[in-house]
Length: 199
Image 1 (cartoon, rainbow, N blue to C red):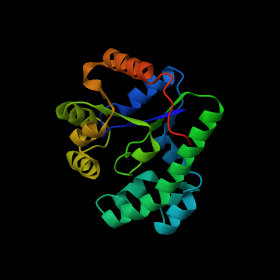
Image 2: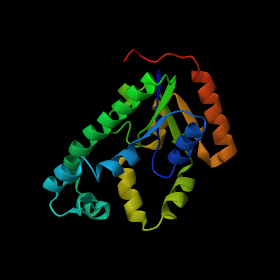
Image 3: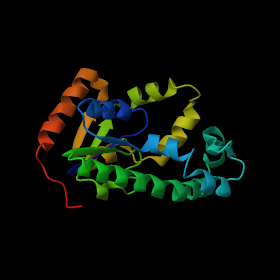
Image 4: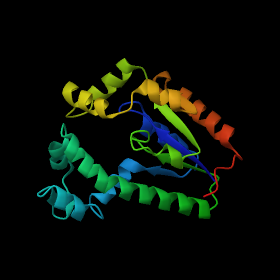
């Protein structure tokens, strides 16, 4: 089985691109969705212990947690030390299940792939990109987003140019959905029959 890592900075169109792989019947593990699930499951107790008061009715209040860690590097590190291993374990389980089911290709959608040093678990990496002005316009159109929040998020992410430099494949979503779909089809064809590392 071949493992393709899918990543990209905020506002680049990563989720839409992941959906294009799903539409082709390719198993995709969504790290963000995994975190959402963990915040009402296995992560609740350790997160509440580290950040008392963020859990309400057995679920981590994401807005409250974000307010606690935004701009506080040591708090963010504490949170990541709890959540990242849980997400990694979920992704490994997903990949194992996909392999047992006979999937020739699996996609791991990991927003912080490079930042979390996860590239080693992938056979190749796809970076989703768009010009900086397109990215900024998309992100600032989101509810509750401010230029300051956007800059704080960008500061934590590996620069787009560096991600593209380290990628095996690049999809530019500013060219439209049809172009992105063609690029995804090209990638799927390029990887057809290719074996990943023994796992």
